[in-house]
Amino acid sequence: MASAHSRMRCGEFRTTYQADMTIFPTPLARQVAIVSVLLLLLAPLCLNAYYLNLLIQIGYYGIAALGLNIVVGFTGQISLGHAAFFGLGAFASAWISNNSGIPVFFSIPLAGLLTMAVGLLVGVPAGRIKGLYLAIATLASQYILEDFFARAEWFTGGSAGAMASPFSVFGYIMNSDQSYFYVVLFYVVLLFLAGANLMRTRDGRAFVAVRDHYLSAEIMGINLNKYRILSFGISSFYAGIGGALFGHYLGFVSAEGFTLLLSIQFLGMVIIGGLGSVMGSMLGTIFMVLLPEVMEFGVHLVGSNNTALTQALAYIKEMAIGLAIILFLIFEPDGLAHRWRMIKNYWKLYPFSY
Amino acid sequence: MGEAVQKTETKESILSINNIEVVYDEVILVLRGISLEVPKGEIVTLLGPNGAGKSTTLKAVSGLLKTEDGEVTKGSIVFKGEAISNRDPDDIVRRGIFQVMEGRRIIEDMTVVENLRLGAYTRRDREIKDDIDRVFDYFPRLKERTGLAGYLSGGEQQMLAIGRAVMARPEMILLDEPSMGLSPLLVKEVFGIIRNINQQQGITMLLVEQNANMALHCASYGYVMESGKIALDGTCEELLNNEDMKEFYLSGGDKDRKSFKNLKSYKRRKRWM
View (cartoon, rainbow over the protein chains, first blue to last red):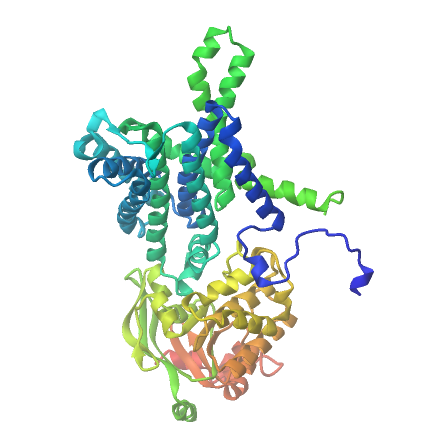
């Protein structure tokens, strides 16, 4: 029977349960991931500071976006306070390394854990409420933390801000874009692999079950409260690490940076990238970081001597973000990750349509 | 009815519900004193019209009432000698009762295997893979479906929901309308498999059904509910031959429709109860 069929591969077929559960869906995906990490390792050698800066931004925002995706995309909760946790991570890492003599190398993960603890605390009431009420509760946590940043001078330096010492390993100080890039890349690879892996485990499946059918989840023995709180904790951990990397990159942390607007931008990254997709978190971040740059480039291209246009640049950037979110919600609610899957499926069967 | 009670007493019952009342939102009284016994290793069916409280009874056992603002206010539910009324659903699953909810409720965004693994959430042993194979032995057609569970047909989703219950290795499964929305042939197939699982795995089942004929042929003992009370109970042979059952649930015993005066109807009797 089988020999009568053509041997041409016309799709990815899995024949074992293991194949259904791998981190990378296809062998090609694994190879692409490895090659792109190798290429990124070479990036500091051939890219200038501008592009490296963009890549580093994509790195630390991407980590935070993945954290938000775990709570919003995978567990189906909502969080409007993600920027505050991002900021808490930045301040915490600066504070730990300045005041306790712990090197930055260790203060970054410690800041992640501290932020996670605060996130779990916020998760305790948030675990009991849903929908709009949860949105308001997380909004409250955003404002409480923002207020805390402005007032707690012992921790954040108040309105003056906090200095964050540079990252160093074995006495070698990594404060240039070239060297810091590797630090960020290390955390991105580590945390994205951890995130993809989390979704293959018993706990990852429990998150998705809580999102899709909380009644079915309960009936299978999953404790809803526990997983809602846990998702806030894990998400805060990612935000804390992202924030700490941000703080040590800039060398200075000020309370003004972590407003509600940044929280909304994180939500935008997750929605544009694709809710419930690990790779989508990265795609959405790339999109959101590059969009203002592309707008700026476009404005300069169209009218470098048109003063009205260049003056309006700041507004154009913000409007573009809003427009992008709206267009994605209308035309591609599943985000870039879904669009990518459709392109892949099209080429898999090319030249046949299905 | 006297004989029936004796029969249940001879077998050790794994679940007994003693005169429970269930109130929703602290005002709506739904169950008004329900008592039933489920003997270990048997299939017991719970029949009745819409709104009689069948699903509420199951939810009272599985603990799901809490999420719907319901509460067991009187009576007790005893499983393996321990009172389990008003406990959390996850606690009850760990004690060995697994509910297959009405309308399947599988996780559409997961594959078949992931859904089955999710069913085994409460387990941490290494035999999960063997159990997945066993579920595929019961439902061979599930093995061929590799995509997301949301793309399965209704019947396959129902099979997956039952398979997911088996994965938890429960001692008792509560089945809420497994025949809902299935073609008659598929209903036969699913009920056949339910019996197989009952006999081979020794899992006790409490089966809520609208398809009275099918349920009575599958189960060994039956209860009929009406507006929050047990109206009738007996072994399935007794119920199949009961005139009232024939009239109301089994599409008429005699071909010519009788006058209500001639019926020794439990519906009329109920009024002075």
